Image (tube, rainbow, N blue to C red; front, side, top):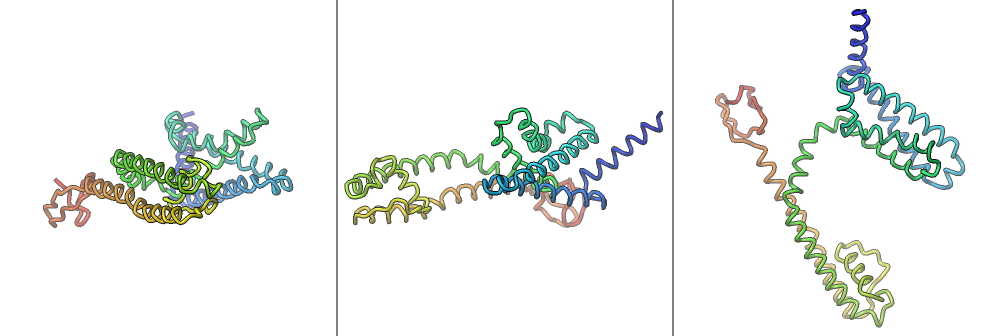
Length: 275
């Protein structure tokens, strides 16, 4: 009996290493196969949204979807089996993504009218982050998120000022253009045009025809170039501060290097333990 339990734990350990690590040939093969399955399943979801293709190949799409769903379900159950804390894994970010990527298919069986809910399966793309080991870069993502958080007041004030500006500009253009151009029939529509113009998107669905209107449009366009740079500068400044905050000036007693990461325990130049 103990031997059976030991063999079971050994099997779980081997499967865990294959699924969660890439330090074995089997683990690398598993990652490659999983990447292909994720890519093909997402491609199937996209193609299925095209009416002509769905009408012509609906049965094929449905069959492929259930094949992918079955394989991903098997993978999810296996992950739950090999991890030490099943509940902790199920509540983790990738655990939730795993469930959300397979759940819509089963819901569509119980609720036939929930076809559009199945588009949630596109979340399978998020699973590539785990396979490609992009979670290793969450520290860098944290720096960006902290910078955005620190900039939120400045950005909020900036966008409030921009909103007030486009409201004023839209109203002015409405006064100038509404008699000569049906595209500026009301103030909200004129504000929409001002937003499109100041962001330099320029859909071209509405354009001024009077001389004053064109002058105003030129001013708004030039203003837009300056406005685009402002939030970029704000966030970049905060990122610089955040990066400086992650460094420490502890000097290595061996080589003198003093630009270490705040979490460093050893010198990155010579390897000596930091005091």
